Image (cartoon, rainbow, N blue to C red; front, side, top):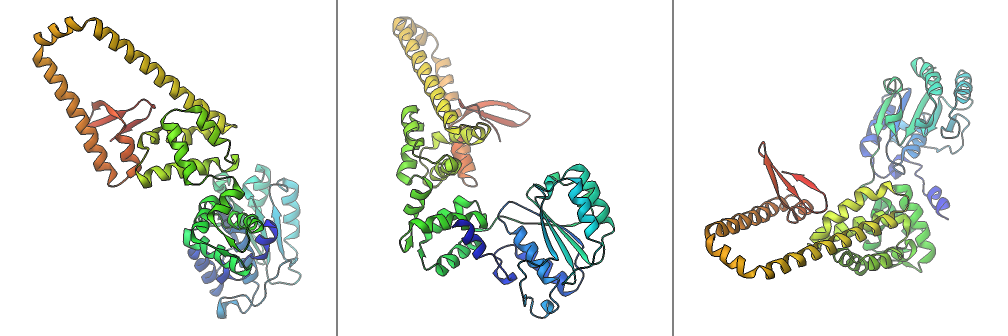
Length: 409
């Protein structure tokens, strides 16, 4: 169902292509003025419309009337002169050599042969070298479009011979407009909260949002709500987020384990980000921010992320327990030496006062600094307020806390 829905609503006109307005303008202008390049690199995250745009461009340069109204008179779905190649499975020099042999033949039915090479970064070094010779002196009737999610893996020699266009993830309004259009065509309603959730889940990828929408439609009866999306993808509502933050704040590993068991592994990262967003939006559980940031940063290096999170919370609980024990021992020592302490306090009243002043001043500095930073960055300001003063060196103030974060300001 998800694949069918995605293919069903693939744009067949530039006007149907949501987002990437700058790229559309560049391509349309180059076609109208007949000065388009013979080699392009479309780079950007997956699901941002690279292959779709390549297909539209391939059709447009072969449409003699495109320049008049900037729209296609006919969209050719399977022309033999528009060749798509998946570099992930055709990555060797033999495939590129075959391609080089074929480009010398004139197009069978169109003016231009267009080669769309998807996942171009997967080509071998030898294949890139073979392709390079073709890009240096391409036949006039051939256009190459390389599409990739990892442009840094494309050799510099290739980059210097193509026109690079960088695709961006969709903005919220762009993606929600697309979702709304599809839902309307499918005869189903979707509320704003549900569209917001799909946008966040997809990370701004059109393809992912459409695949997710297809899954949700199967479970919805006339209307898609945020609750239905949570149910389909194994997410927790706001009450679950609050319960999780409360458990983390109390270092309750058992409760954290119970909550994590309700979350789909695929969307664990999304849940952690939502928890962080809740703190920033509601200014609650600020003490949990350093822990969450640490978890979000480091859990990506572990195969079993939930186990890592539980281990982290357990370590914090153990650390807190040791601190309490140490504090208890200190209290006992103070009680035993109560009389001696009183005598010492009477003999050193000035030192006592000085220490109190320093302690109060330190607290004021932290509070004041946190308030100033919060005006620009609530998340960072909240983190600062959990810190203690470190050292001042070369006019740099260092803040530290028990979660091993170092902040310089």
